[in-house]
Image 1 (cartoon, chains in turn brown, cyan):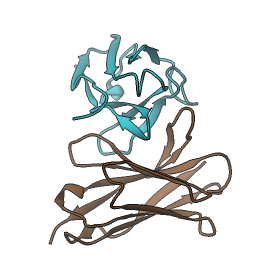
Image 2 (cartoon, one colour):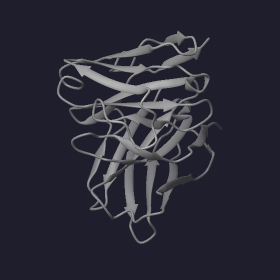
Image 3 (cartoon, rainbow over the protein chains, first blue to last red):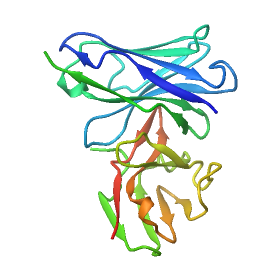
Length: 121
Length: 108
């Protein structure tokens, strides 16, 4: 059973960079034709896809966040990471990592429990 | 404002059948498959329906999905109190995954 766990600081100052890591267990991040995605959810609001990475390093980002987002993968540690720069209060949200089936169905079948990141001075 | 449009709320009594709609456009639902997620209070979303009408292992057959043109629907039959949750539709749109705004289902 694949499990995902987000980790990282719960508080980030405005204008700084948010950094999160997702650790995958129960299977190799490199096995199967899967992407690995980040999704966020502000309190009381809906879901927003941030971007994805394939184990080859190929990435896709949400155009609305593309200029500030970097997603990377470390297959030796079975982890992938998110960096979001120049954060503001609008970036305060629960951040989820998820396994992404990719083309043609693009569904997320395994999710982490989520981690709350608050942007505040 | 979400790319996919869902009603903000829905309700039903135990045993009833309820449906939740999801409206999109030719660039998302019209040309790609639709997935549905269930989010129980305080928990991460869970995949409920994928590829328009497929249920992952472990999802009861009370849940079903359909798609026609640029719209999709989630149906829940034999409504149970544990079905009270937020439901989100999602689809690929050109270069990103887009979600509906979510529908809060209340079991009366």
